[in-house]
Image 1 (spheres, rainbow, N blue to C red):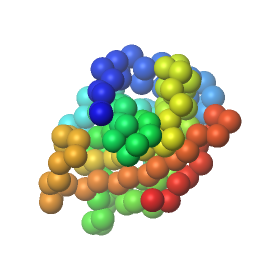
Image 2: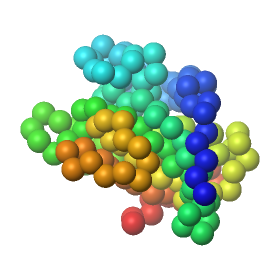
Image 3: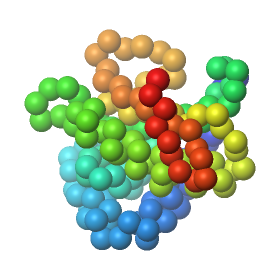
Amino acid sequence: MIDLIGHKSAFAAHATSEGLARAGRFLGSALVLAMSMTSSVQASNLLPVPSGQPVELSNVLLDTNPGELWVRFRFIAPNIGATVGRITYDVAVIDMEHLCQTLAVPYVALHDLDPARVVISFSDRPLEFGTSEPDATQFFEAYRLEQSQCIWEGL
């Protein structure tokens, strides 16, 4: 079963302000940089990440299909890709870990969830969950949460 959580924008704004308070000027600068970049993503919904790329929370899914609860945070990151000038996986993975720590951890605590895994995914365009589009670029990382920390789980 997959449930779509519909209050992403308010939570993202709350998590963004907490993340900025915790991370200080670096993330504030990243937010300004991300908001100034030309993108199809609305600046008001951008989340600060270490790379400064524009990243927007698309949705949060509660997925019990693998036989246990997985919370999936799906993001639109229009600048990702493997070609020159794009944000590569090696850079995006740092952003994904950052979002796990600053957005997923507080979200799970706020909603009193106990997931077996948290999945952070980036897509260069909006995609329906579970569909494949050959021209789309997608990056995924999975984490388990231990003592409010994201522990990478190589899938």
